[in-house]
Image (cartoon, rainbow, N blue to C red; front, side, top):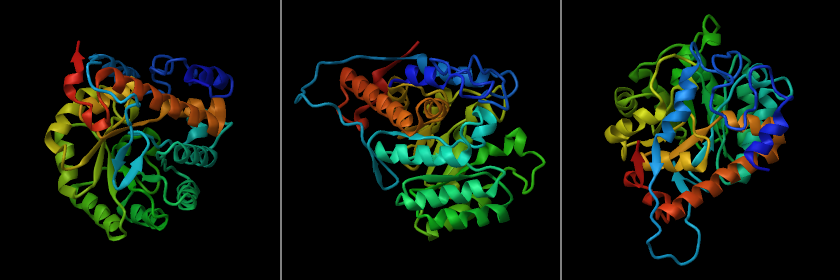
Length: 344
């Protein structure tokens, strides 16, 4: 099944806000929170999607070929992935998408599907401690094939959550630092809030002491990227949290090149936000990202087809990326360069 068929199968099985649109562009859900919408005007998620389409792919089929397909595999923090794309973390699945799946079901589904397709899923964190703990157990059972993501709670709470995360020996541990702005975390205990460079360095050091890389997710400009570099993180995710933490921010495609220009080569740079196709993934690579993450369409695929639906969507993205690489003259992901795009 392709994504459109999975979306059609998901309709009627999700909450009232997500419409399981044939193209997940943020328009139907708008500012629907709870739900998959964006904060305030709801326009940030829409602009995330549209910003990628402002870059046109420049075809070039004048190159020597041995008849084989381009190789979309890549290295990520010491692991070889079958494609430069991972499943982004998602929390409170039942609250935002519908009661037919909860966080525990969803995490197991995407972790297994991602591993089967040769990549990784990131798991979300939330108000229920057992969600994070069970996710870490699932990752341990899959040989560390997953990335637990921790909210920016108080440092004491984060360090406590690091214990089961590091015990799972995961591919990495992440913190979505921009989660400090999530409305449903305001006023909760333990509190969530911003983290300074010293605090981020403490977390990175704790992970490195266990031999696990540390990733800061939610960087939206060169200033934040340089702070993350100073803190000693191994990778960053250029992200605006799908527009769910602050209205009026730039689309991720708009800031990715400037972030790559200041820390590319010193940090692994990932990006999310509005990536919906293999062509979008190609655009992200051409703008300098080492890999990308995708979230909302994976949730739709899970509601529409379960674990096999998630696998089918990941396989579709891989096939679309291979096609774009072949038509633009890139035999491997390292050969996808900025001059393969035209901005309009």
